[in-house]
Length: 278
Image (cartoon, rainbow, N blue to C red; front, top):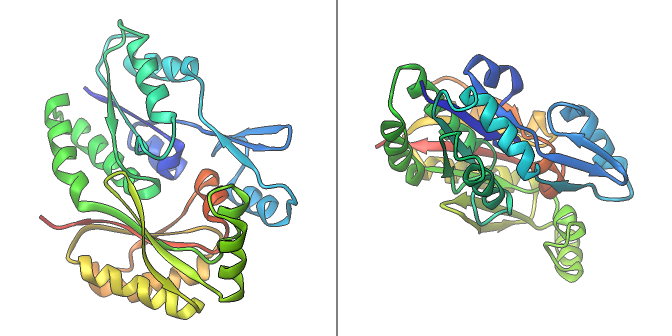
């Protein structure tokens, strides 16, 4: 049986990952000199409480090569089974390169590294489908082929409630962030095929959520649809209710994104991850 491994930026709830037999390698969140393993040493509620009140923005770091090697060896039974490691898009972080180095450094552990080209629950959907196929007895080649067909149909679209955290993280100029605050600019962004692009600029909270729903309608019908948020459950629930008609009448599941995504997006972000129908 193929074993599926991912990292915590997939934002799969811990109990669901365990249930589906997915091994999750935690990324690291640093608040000053304090370091926490995402999803292990700090809960989402604890993280967002500190994020909102902290004067210093936390930083994120990837696991070491050794930690990847240890996880892969554990998943494979030290070489007994093939491992498929699905990680965040290679253009978004050095994590993908570190994962490949770890796989190449452990020749006795048969590890295939797969570039999801995605972040958060977009990657999470790929991981869960891979785990499902593995449980059903699919071969490694069959699972990779499935992912290759699924990935171009998978995307994450979200609206940020503030540009401040991108600015504080060095990903946006102070001038742009200040202008965005004055004008109440809330960008609608898309993560798709290793690219992060801006789809629209909105000024008011309700308008931004309306645009989010419109983009969802543009990409329907769906095979899978999830709503995600960063400490914005009420807004996410409202969006999920409005997307029910695109999900066979059922409200899409709502999942809170984790610490790595929250560090860069800030609180108040709402979005959806989807796989369009073939």
